[in-house]
Each structure stands twice: as structure tokens, then as C-alpha cells.
Length: 163
Image: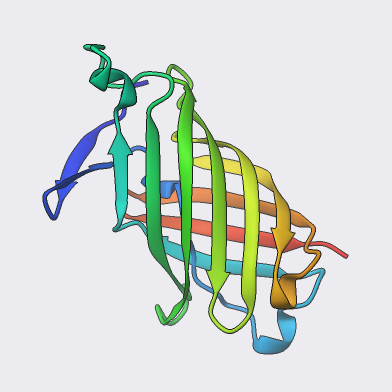
């Protein structure tokens, strides 16, 4: 799989994996308990693709070991109001399949943080990836995160918390 790069504000960014991060929230405040789904949209505007292997002499556009670092706003899909941000780092592990291993932190303003780690792909829909930890209202969180790429700069996130 080839990862297409484009410049945003002078910095190369990855179009094929822009859907790896962040989303908005459509559930009322009382719905932030276990057994609920949080739906947000990521505005993929601040990500950097680091072609590690090209620094070591590779002539391929993408190589295993290349990585993406990001920190993007999350918005409510219904109102586009900002509800937090998502940050993380993903390492390309399977170039042909477009599979990354990622560490992702979802920060929901005034609510807490949800951490996830797992395999993500750059081909459209990823998950469910396991939730590994949480803080504040998400302390002890268990569940999954599924991400769907909507466009080069927008990703749909479903965070499912289970009891």
C-alpha cells in the first residue's frame, strides 16, 4: 500500500491514515457512564508522517517502522462544537496491508481521558481496538474504539464503554 503525502501548512501529512484519530460527542452529560457509546469526529489537521527508513537510505515511499505523530481536535458531529482532542503515535508494521500499531489518548474536556492501543489500518475502518485505561469519569474504563475514515481530514470515532 502506498501512503499519499500532502503538505498542510508546510508540513507533510498522511492522507491515507488521516482517519486514525479523533471524533465529536453526541451524548448528553448523563450518558458518559459505562455501557454507553461516545460518538465524536476527529479533525485531522495536526499530524506528521515520519519516514524513518528513508533517513536510513530506503528509496521506498513507505517502510515498516515509519510512524505518524498527531494531536487533533475532536468535535461533536451534530454541532461541530469542540469537545476535546486526540493524540497519539502510530508505527507502520505492515506496508502492504496498511496496518499500524498505535497508542492513542482521547481527552474529553471536563470528563477525563481514555487510552487505547492496538492495530489500526489506513484503508477505511479500524477496530474495534481495546480501551486500555481511563481517568476521571473513565477511571477503570473497559470497551472498544472503532474509527472510520470519512475523508483526508475527518475521522468518525465510536467509543463503546462496557460495564
